[in-house]
Length: 276
View 1: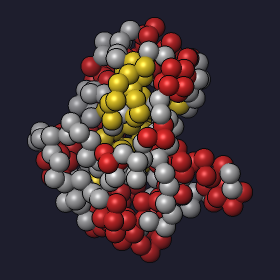
View 2 (view 1 turned 60 degrees about the vertical axis):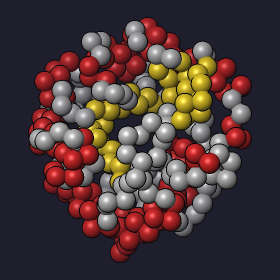
View 3 (view 1 turned 120 degrees about the horizontal axis):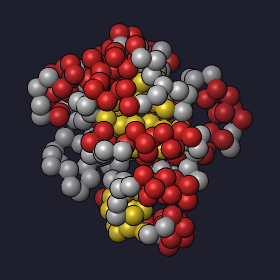
View 4 (view 1 turned 30 degrees about the vertical axis):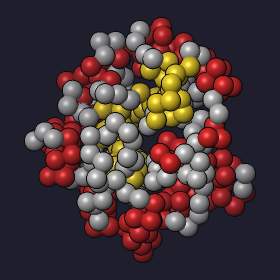
């Protein structure tokens, strides 16, 4: 994807915030230029990475309020290295995070949890990221069994997700972690509230075009953002509508719903401002 194509897509959609995912976006020869052009336009950019190339590419980027690294860490050392099927990646990622922090960058993380996780492992990794690595913010998500996933056996169902996060968050623990989520989305993970998916809330763009309906499901592509929004039957998707959606509780669909619900409630808006 060219710099021009990437920037045009963002300008067309009007998105205020951009998550550059992959694959591994640091492989792109002009990823620093894409980031720079989006930052110039005052877009908030999160550059997702497995951090293998991150430390050696730090000098291509400039710290600032509109740019943040988003490092994928799916557990502590043994669990993360098993997840990515490559020994030593956890240590490389931690070293890269520390180097970025020393360079003045904002650093966030993204962690996916599976059936082999427990309330204890959830707390351990979040405590490590929050208290020892001291990253700026953390995102979390239950794993979703999308069709092309090589391992279909370790994805959490809805009730399993509720039990896992209800126990992990017990005792007010979630208030101490710098989680990059609305309180209502965290309530949703615990099963305190229920939402329907807002599949259009975080649209996905790639070299193929705008992906229908979300980045986890590929029901074709639209050439323009307008075409995506106006010609996709959004009511087809979500739990109770499409069997592929039955166990999905990923933030790409449900954080948007939680944010919309937050903005419609004075109480929830104040709660979000208080980070509770």
